[in-house]
Image 1 (tube, rainbow over the protein chains, first blue to last red):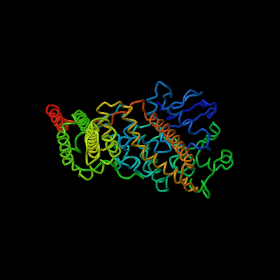
Image 2: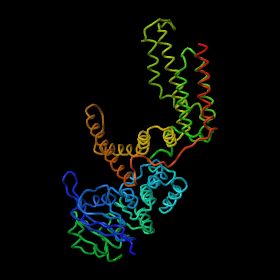
Image 3: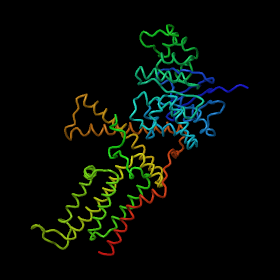
Image 4: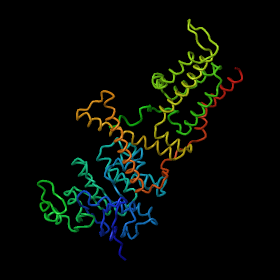
Length: 248
Length: 254
């Protein structure tokens, strides 16, 4: 008995209603427990792909399957519980008056109530080290703390796969490292969309490049980052002085 | 970023009034206000009675008189309107300190002033003893349409975020040498307001996306339920019921 992969995307193509085609047949399989970095220049279709994973965008060609469940109208509630998306701006993600209520939102929408709900919320906040801030309003937290709470709001739903959109953006180095420690400690499949290549190398053994609407490369993160010709072709650049082989 | 941990109107304390469930307080204040406005304006002593009742509530809630009076200032624009009435309402005239004033106008001014002040004072007491969050839960409990409660709740959550965005835009304008000095600059301010609207609208779309991604289907899930015991209801009802008694006496004696 084999468990189905956390995520299976096959032949996914999508054009926006205004005619702009963003995806031209994406194939991607992410096995359970893997941590994969999704790299690509601006406008490559990364966000469009992410919004397909939980059925916000549908209707193009191809299929998306999450833990064996096809993404579609029929299983939408189940899919959205299984795919936890952490958006880039925590102020968009945290919309409830207090941290606790925000973390409770997803499970409560799924019908969890009372003491069970409290336990779920506490556990999720513990996992990101934010349990002491449960009753604070989100706008009184630092940016790094808000990002961590945003991760907790999604963890509370016990997702099959955690999808992070630019998790390290706007974080100071300490918060960036703290978040990395948290992500490493989680026992969950991760798909991380990022421009922060050292972060991708640090956290994800495997990386894929999405460029012009297709998967242009798929391999070990260290090898991809070291392939200067491949990197240049897809407008990917390492920070000054960063040599992947020196850390990997 | 934000000023404090609670809203400016709220005054943190431990008192029997603070501890009442929010929906009982909301119902009590609404009942009180309805009773006050139904009182005949000629029953002057009844209004003194109401004021006394509120003073008792304020004392129980440990809200100092100065705090209450300062917050009553919000009423000033309405007071100005009330003060005009004795001069402009037609009808029987009377002389006060050599100035000719209309008698119905004086009664009208008194009516607006007395009922308005009592209503505002009751609301200020409610706001200073109940956190905003609790008020929303109370409204939800009293079966206010969920959409209205959601809108109010988002207003509270994003008020600071949007104010902050507005401040950043203002800093950006000034950093490029712009100072709004007169009518000629209103165009720039109007464009900024438009840009702020579009930004907020787009944020709304992103927030909606985040909500849908976590299973939102149009109704907010119930996370905290507020409940009240009979004793708490009775305690809260003391205010409107005593007021009702005064009101009835007012109708029978005037």
